[in-house]
Amino acid sequence: MKNPEAQQDVSVSQGIRMMFYMMKPNETSFQALEEVPDYVQKATPYFISLMLLELVVSWIRKGKPPGRLDDALTSMSAGILSRLPSLFSRSIELTSYIYIWENYSIISLPWDSPWTWYLTFLGVDFGYYWFHRMAHEVNILWAAHQTHHSSEGYNLSTALRQSVFQIYTSWIFYSPLALFIPPSVYAVHLQFNLLYQFWIHTKVIDNLGPLELILNTPSHHRVHHGRNRYCIDKNYAGTLIIWDRIFGTFEAENEKVVYGLTHPINTFEPFKVQFHHLVNIWTTFWATPGFFNKFSVMFKGPGWSPGKPRLGLSEEIPEVKGNEVPFSSSASQLLRIYVVVQFALMLTFYEETFADKAALSQVTLLLRVCFIILTLTSIGFLLDQKPKAAVLETFRCLLFLMLCRFGHLKPFIPSLSFTFEVYFTMLINITVCGHTCLKLSLGSSQLYI
Image (tube, rainbow, N blue to C red):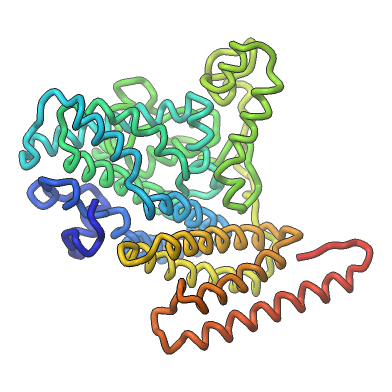
């Protein structure tokens, strides 16, 4: 896809409608792949607006927010991490598709035909169903997808909790479309299918009546995110729930859903959220005897072990009672406010980096990405109250000052550059002093924050 400034603008009306897959074929058909807007990147203000709307509705209806701050920040951090690779290269879901299209396509359907548009809608959704199902039934694929399920909450921020490396396997399930669907049409629906799934991650919408028969809805998707036994491996749909009804994986919502992994990971550290199951697979692989058993560790279900069925035993899934308490950060209220401020500042640099990526050098891009990753890691450390959190945060503040000094990071308002430097210098002094005083006061216990 082209650089943002070379793409077609998305109006407010289109921005709202694209979140619900309500765009028309005549306004989203493009002859060349380079003309296709980056709808996902342009959706950021709509993500934020809908999350704020969910917050207001939840306060009015239930008198409380729809989720927890620490969990929401972790989900948004995962979403940011998943988007960073696209700063440097086109997605493998597109590059692989283009390769197949250019070398093995059988026929070329017209890019501007509504029939092609609707066929692609069905084809992408069908491909997503089977990718999603395999991501739950094949352990090495689950290692990526589990990131999305690791939240113990269920709200719109949960939708943003995406895997960094899931796209490196999902392309396989869409590749047959490249035999006849033009890449520009595929690129549109690949994005719309993802955006549609944002709004269904909420508890403020109950039953949608007849729409429940055809569409994937919040009710259906709540079941999918549950760790109750009746919820496991159900409702894989992207947009249309008909695939689950056809292939026998549909389950209606009945008893209270408890969200998250069957074995919660109890951390807000972004790299553990992304990669902890890969570590588990590695350990299990070497501890399991026999070549075929090792192969099965990788390619059978996450619950498999020697002597069990391919997907494991349902009776081994821990039972839930409905009164489970989600893991929460023990950080003070003041520290939470600090974390939110730092996250907001980082988010402005993240958005600016995507907006200006065509004008930025590779060195500046790389340094900005490193700073963003370091910020998200430091926030995770602070929320987890890790022993070295203060040291890492001090280093991050120093790095920020260096990047500003050498022009790799700039405030939106240049006149505020000095203010930013003073602000981060004060943060460093406060962090270092606080860390030193705590170390002295604790003496031989050697506990740090």
